Image 1 (cartoon, rainbow, N blue to C red):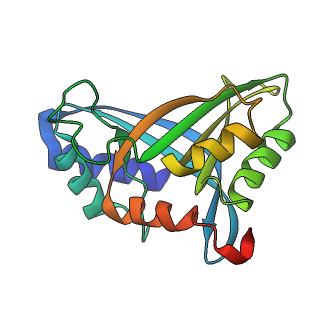
Image 2 (cartoon, one colour):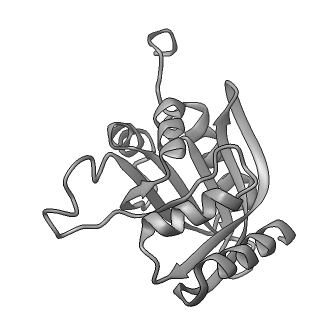
Image 3 (tube, one colour):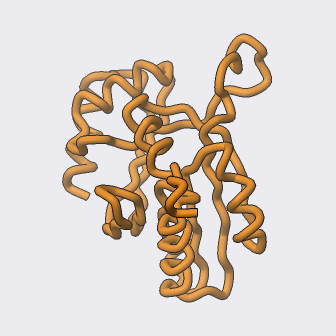
Amino acid sequence: RASAGRLVDQLQEQLGGQFENAHFADIRSFYWWEGQVQNEIEVRLTVDSTAPFADLRAAIEKVHPYEVPMIVGAAPTGNPIATRGPADQYLMGTADLNETTVDLAHHIAKELVQVRYAGCVQVEAIQGSEDQHRITLKTTKGMRAYILREFGGLPLHWTSLRGNQAYLDWLTKAVEISHGEL
C-alpha cells in the first residue's frame, strides 16, 4: 500500500486538478510470467481522473515500479471514430462468486492462467466477506470462447479494454498456446 500511496502522490503532482480520486483494493494476482503461474498479493489502484486516457497512462508509466505495469481502462464504445481498430481485441471479465471459499476462488484463478485462457486473474473479497469473492480476468477476444466453453458456469461480465502497449503485448503472449500445449 505504501508504494501505491507514493504513486498516487506523484500522479496528483503530475495531473493537478485532473486527478479526482484513488481507490485501493487488496487482491491476490495470478498471472503468467517467465513460463509459469505466479501468485502475488498486490494492491490494485483505480484512478478517477478527467485527464485523457493517454495522458493518464503516460503519467502512470513514468512512476510505476513494475517492469510491465497493467494500465488499463474500458475501451470507448458507441463512437465509430473512437472504436476504429481492435477495440474489442482485449477483454476484462468480472464475476462475483457467492458462497465460495477463498481457496476455491484462488483455484479457479490459477487454473484460468495455467491453461493460458487468461494472462492475469485477480481475486478480491467482496466487502470483507469470507464467502463472497470477485475474480477479474484479462484476456484476448480469441480466448473468450474457450473461457465460456470451459468455465461457462462463471457469471462473467465482459468489458473491452485499452491499455499501455507493453501490457497488451504481454497479454497477447501470455494467452498464446503453442501447438505442443494443445
